[in-house]
Length: 113
Image (cartoon, rainbow, N blue to C red):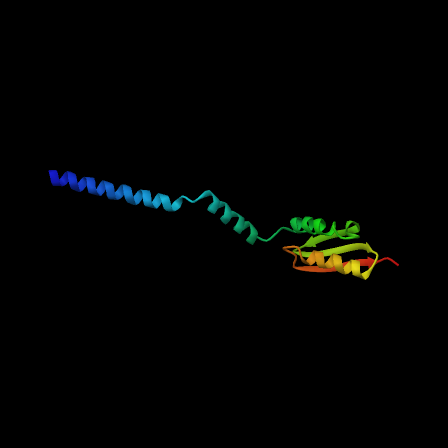
């Protein structure tokens, strides 16, 4: 009977230990969990609306950028409107290409004469 109690206690302790160990593996550090969520978001493709907003934001800091219309379809950004020079057009296109998620740029900007 005494051996039976010892055996039962040992099995209970082993089961409890394994259960706690398994549970500890499923719990994550909150910072680690946040990092994994951010990483998943970074890997997810951006929507066309998000790309458009980021391009518009990038163009605001460039001379003439506020006069540009930005449209995005499947990651392809179309720039339209009027600018004063080829250099300005090129700068706006470069800034657009630097935005994450942009697959290609269609530069329909017209140079004012």
